[in-house]
Image (tube, rainbow, N blue to C red; front, side):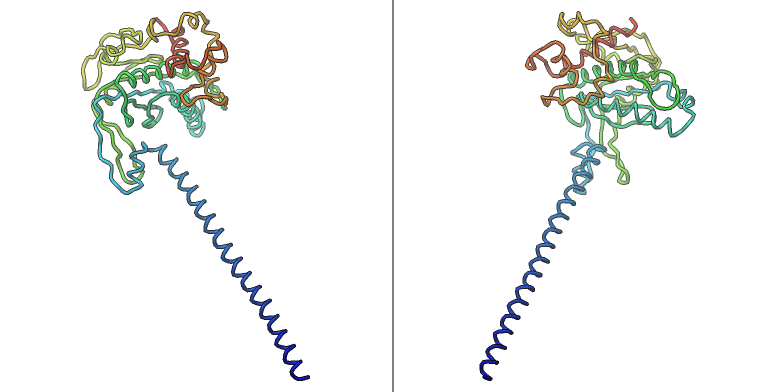
Length: 337
């Protein structure tokens, strides 16, 4: 009898021990799995935040400069033998600010204009350097080097696009303001670029080319795209220029300058496309607000429009050539002279 009771107790103890061990192992497994899940989640969140940080950084600095900064390496200045600098200045911003009668609304107005210009810039092989007050600055041929005539042509096409954009822009916020007026200046030549500062580092451009481009903007009139003689002589076969005569430029004296009227006759779109009346061409603002998917990585919104309206096969549409000529044709038809 005693032996039977002992066996029963041993059996109960063994049962309880097994159950307790199973529960303990289950708890340990749960804790380990939970820890692993949290670790994986934290790594995923860390990667996500790192990507967000990189996106912000790449928007502020060129990718190469941003990567050097992330590695703790100080970037050195780079001299570019051929670069094109463009300044676009909102001429009547002070008047518009007084009309809005609010500092916050003035900033909102400026943000709306520059945001739309950013969307237009996405269609061009140009780099946005910075905005200085009401001045928008872009560069071609840096930091990604390309052929001289390519970045010069891109800047000219972008300038024509901006001029048409200024003609079409309408403020939809509170208050009534005067129509947007913009003056643009372009110059080409050597330039030095590099990241300046450790606290709030900025990608800056230096050199006489930059200074002259700025003067081209400040000495031009609303609606003009004033360029230097060097720029005009390089692109005279691609664009039509109108002489502005001798202009006094600070630090340079008298300089011969030109206004870009439009795309040269032989560089314009085909005879079929030229027959389209300007009023039938797409609005710059419509192209900006379009959310239509772009089927090809090189295709612009305007080239998609051409395929839909004229039924042109995608293979016949050259990158940039047909896309920007729509802007240039409108600008040419509405510009004086």
